[in-house]
Amino acid sequence: MESKADSETLDRHDRRMIAILETEGRLPVTELARRVGLSKSPCQVRLKRLVEDGYILGFRAVLDMAKIGREHVAFTEVKLSDTTEKALAAFNAAVKRIAEVEQCHMIAGPFDFLLKVRTRDIAAYRRVLGESISALPHVANTSTYVSMQAVKDGPLDALD
Image (cartoon, rainbow, N blue to C red):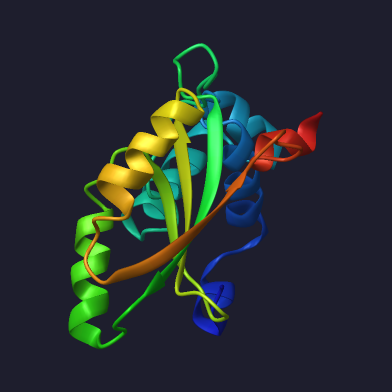
């Protein structure tokens, strides 16, 4: 969430640049500058500042998960047997080492964590669940929800 200090630091050009780059990260600086109404040099300076100040954390490719064999998506609720800070830290460190876990969110609710897990298929998911997720520190139980279709999966979907 944006703080008051952030909103005072970013002007309309910065905000427009961020909005454009969120969906088109490989856009050439000349085109970015044209779209936000700046010349190339000031646009480059602003872009460099946005990266250095941590507003832009990096640039990445959007992959076709079916083509690379990671089409299956499951959401896994995880309930821990211990939620002390030490137990949470152990769980957090261990879950980061599971490559198939694409996202991990601590949840306020009837369970403790929600994981987004990507695998080749349901059999691969079952292996990850049984061998990796269930073996994480302090895991008491899990529940799985299999995604049948991603209706929206990021800012690029807003362009369709």
